[in-house]
Image (cartoon, rainbow, N blue to C red):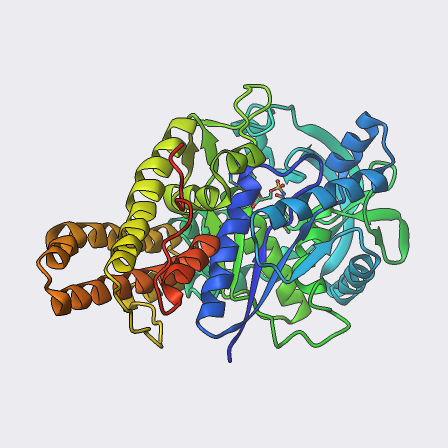
Length: 472
Ligand code: MSP
């Protein structure tokens, strides 16, 4: 049995979960469920990123003690993930004492690559990122994502000598030893790698207190990304435990905006610790709302809970896993969402199940069960390449094709003409193919797949009591 470790980016807890966070969760969940179905053992991490200035400032603004604030918000993320039906195994919080202790030990292990120097430059608290002079000029001093001027920092910090690893990282990316998906992001990262200076990895406590204290230096706390990236291994027990059963990760899921951290700083940290690099880093695009970045100022933020409540969880997963391309930016509009629900889930799939089950029940068709469910080769190829939206399309083509076959083969005419053998044969073949498609559907829509299985599982076919997707 293979062991697979799958991870998601841990969101900052300075607000409530939004649609973007759901992308990481849903994609990683499909990956986890797929490998479980293949018989592999899966460890699946999620969690919350709770340090840094952004969070500290927000709690202060709200006049809530920071720990209380992060406790409350971390819980919100946990319940959101549960609402999404995400099959995670481990939840990590960066303010847990275990994580903090392990991160300090990790820092000590990296000490050969750490030095102290003066930093004079720019910082964006929204991105929690140091900004190069070149970026500053390109963006005229204002962060395009947060619409806030970059802050000037002049402080003494610890630096991580990324330069020690650049050549090795370049080779790992070029040779796909650490595979970056989609492929077109690889060039972008290789270019960024060339330009990346050593990274400042701490802040003086005069500027930031909400972080992990640097071992042996009470005047400094760790830079939030230093602490956050380590979550992927502290949750496995590193450095206390041997993590070789699970590490390197099979796939790490992140948004394109934070790919650079995961393919430059993170590999440099891992190399400094003598640990292997993740096998794959999957970068998904951004979910837009009516063609624009979601922003409270524009007023186009779509609340995920509202979307789930409209047509249910399965519809939510359906839309974001099929209609949002796995690797590109994609748009959410209520019109597109309603169309997808009514035309595809209700018409294509809901009707198909209803039609086949009713025909089988009405004509007392007995179904011989298929013992071994197998995924088709094409599906396996797409799933192994993390091309989830494409794999989902493939499953949907099968569903649509089954509807067409029912129309062409007209089992109701066979029943009417008393052609019992042909009817049984025809129904058996249609239902077998539906169950195979349903098996491939299960990582995407686990709840629906379970219901469909139930309809055809017993000796007698039992049509669903109410439509799987009532028109809305
Ligand atoms: N805390 C860091 C991640 C640390 S991982 C060691 C962070 N947090 S975040 O809350 O800003 O983002 C969490 C995840 O949500 C990232 O993968 C990010 O790309 C994703 N998304 C945030 N907004 C998004 C959209 N509008 N669309 C799609 N994903 C987006 O970055």
